[in-house]
Amino acid sequence: MMRTIEKSAMTLARAADGNPIITTVVTILFFLGFNILEGQIELLIWGERFPHWLDPIFIVGFMAYAAYSVYACAVFNSAKQRV
Image (cartoon, rainbow, N blue to C red):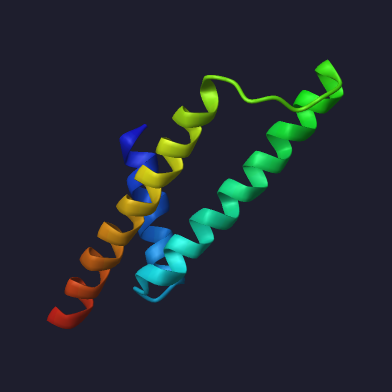
């Protein structure tokens, strides 16, 4: 599981050419999309959106991934400077 997250963060860093601002914005956009999808599922099943105890866990998860993608940018940029 950790290897998959590491590979996705490095792919994101390569796609952003090592720019941590772009990787953070992309992660925020994915969180917004996830939040909209989650709300739509809640609306379809229960008839309304509502806050629940999983929301903070999802938020922290996306924040951690954004931080890890910034770290991946640092690794990408340091490897690029060695060449």
